[in-house]
Length: 121
Image (tube, rainbow, N blue to C red; front, side, top):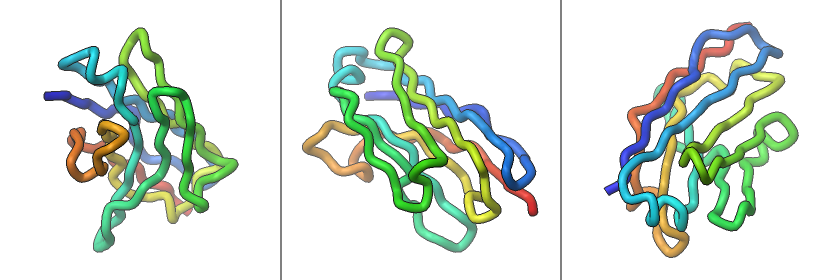
């Protein structure tokens, strides 16, 4: 129902920055009412929440990224971005974009294919 496409991943040195973008397409009326988010999955580990932003602009961050990452959405372009600063090797993971209704879980929502982020020491 909603298609997501991530971009912006890459290889960076610790302390550097990256900006991830997620383009959403499909039912624009649904997209506007959805909570958008970023999740990440490191090798051998489960997929965990990084940050979310509701349709009203309320944000939520994992404790590990607070003060370093910023999530934002553009309602006109139907995109959501994740600005990542002061990157650490522990941030290395595949980052996934997610879209869901507020009453639904992230797992029941839509997912992108992911973009790889590698932070070297």
